[in-house]
Amino acid sequence: NANPLHAEETAKFAGKKGTSSERTFIMIKPDGVTRGLVGDIISRFEKRGYKLVAIKSLVPSRQLAEQHYADLSTRPFFKGLVNYITSGKAPVVAMVWEGKDVIRQGRIMIGATNPLDAAPGTIRNTYSISIGRNIIHGSDSFDTAEQEIGLWFGKPGELASWEPANWNWIMA
Ligand code: ADP
Image (cartoon, rainbow, N blue to C red):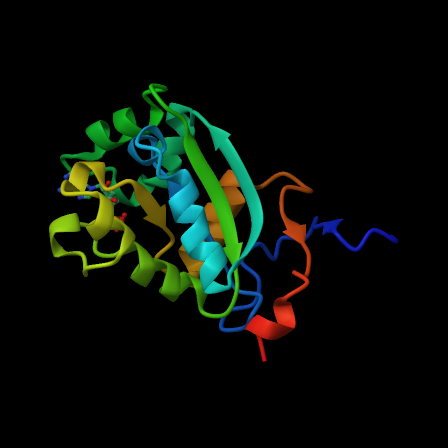
């Protein structure tokens, strides 16, 4: 294949843990989209030095949202959470970002689940004040990253392997 941007068909969705090929699933929720924060959020990851390997905008089905948040299914806020994500009043923007320590760093950039506890300068602190409208999701471990990337971008060819021209200036 002469095309350097080759679509991946393997199951190694989350790259290699602890290396520069590590990947995480980041989703801007409908409130983040409605409020015009897509550009800023993408920009933060780009400027930090992370690589975008997949992106799409969609209104998730109930089934997809319920699978994504399956570990929270017994919580009292579960139904409201699924309603909020699937309402269709605005889509979500689902992405996969790649780079060194991106799973942990992504969580740090996003900030605490409750925006009132999120550190100043984090995405949630900067743009939100309610735990039920905290604008963004990020995988919280390598295992959940693998699971979530597979769930949202599981079709062959949805992830792009590529090398940014400035990669050597970011990764030494
Ligand atoms: P995180 O998104 O930081 O990984 P969790 O996995 O604990 O946090 O929760 C998933 C999402 O569920 C949160 O981002 C938030 O949108 C919602 N949520 C969590 N706790 C509450 C709550 N007490 N009330 C309403 N929504 C909540």
